[in-house]
Amino acid sequence: MNPPDGEAGAALVPDADAALVSRSCEVSDVSFGSFLAAGDRHRIHWAAPDGLEVVGGGAAARLTADGPDRFETLRRDAETLFSSVDHDGHAATRPRVFGGLAFGPDHDPSGVWEGFPAAAFTLPAVQLTRVDDGTYLTVTRYGPDVSAEGVSDALSAVRDRLDDLPMMRARSEKPGVVGTEWLVDREEWTAQVASVIDRIRAGDLRKAVLATALRVDLGAEVDIPDTLGRLRRTYPECYRFLVQPTGGKGFFGPPPERLVRREGEVVETEALAGSMPRGDTPETDAEHARSLLESDKLQHEQRLVVDTICEQLDAFGTVGEGEQGVRKLTNIQHLQTPINAVLDGDTHVLELVEALHPTPAVGGLPLDAALETIRETETWDRGWYASPVGWFDAAGDGEFAVGIRSGVAGGREATLFAGNGIVGDSDPDAEWDELQPKVRPIMDELERDA
Image 1 (cartoon, rainbow, N blue to C red):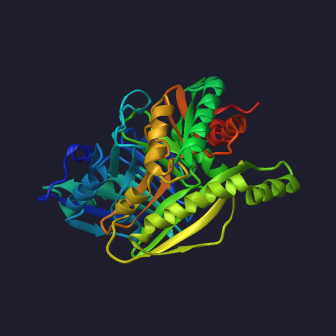
Image 2 (image 1 turned 90 degrees about the vertical axis):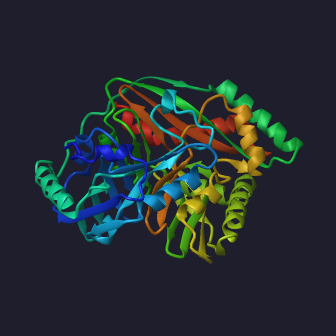
Image 3 (image 1 turned 60 degrees about the vertical axis):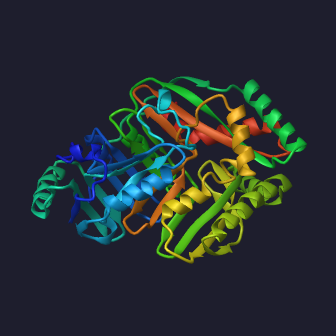
């Protein structure tokens, strides 16, 4: 089901003379995967563990930005985009833009990351929203000549076409993996880790997060909507996202970590650092969890992350730290500390994202020294890996996850990403072994069952 009209708006710079008109209606449940598969451009998918799920196709408008001022550019253009909003529908269907940003401002949109600017957010032309009390269809238009009557007519037309989509989508066969290659192999990566350890022990650097990527050659073309559907069943406790700016590659994954959520004056985030595998038995699983809690190295790594996030949020309001626990996922478990804040003023979620990204869990400490170390050590482009992905609305509310456990895929190839936090007592070989489970979430959904 290709999105109706609306595509022309995707190329428009937000215009103070334009209007944003959005109309919604409740619909019978429909396969979100079928909706995604029927579109071909500007596809987005966002699903949060608390129940909100949105899929969108087409673009009523797009926000893009480059360089070190990309956050400010996004906020300024969003203010123009949302300056005149006429929305009729459930509160959960209100206009929001979905997307993300590259890890750093010097992003190169080529190679693996072709089609991905340093920052890109889409206001979907057509979207489905699922919340606890129902499923809703929304059509949105943006431009100087948009009318409420025209948008209502478009909603009726899309609803008729929605009836042709199945309530359940048949599960396709996994594409299969015919070859893999680490962009940085074990020998080179452990040597990089050793050099970072030497730098930590010799100077002011306390932690740096090193990452690498796994290129995967597939036996058939990847079906990203179907892959997301399988991830939903396997990782229901995680976020799920897809950002696909063109008909080409899509960036997607099931990240476990919230970067930040702002709802009014309330801000929620978390520190997620330190990892152990899940055990094959309840006893070994519990032993791994105890190791997380009792490891001086992992507790030190977690404390660095908690303290830094609290310091960063302190500038915006009153900060509180929750009780540390263990976050258990399907194939891995992490130390987790919830953190919250009450804002003193009217702070846009993008301001919080800018302040928090990159967290010590994906960058390091001190941040400037860690980023310099990453630039000098890593020999590949992170692109959007470990970056903020999520949404925001006209009020400045929004939610972002950290784009880890992620990959870029299209056609018969995929690139999967993984990284580890390196501190002074890290062991290079152990760090390599710790990388391997982090590519499994997506790899398991690409490999055919034996």
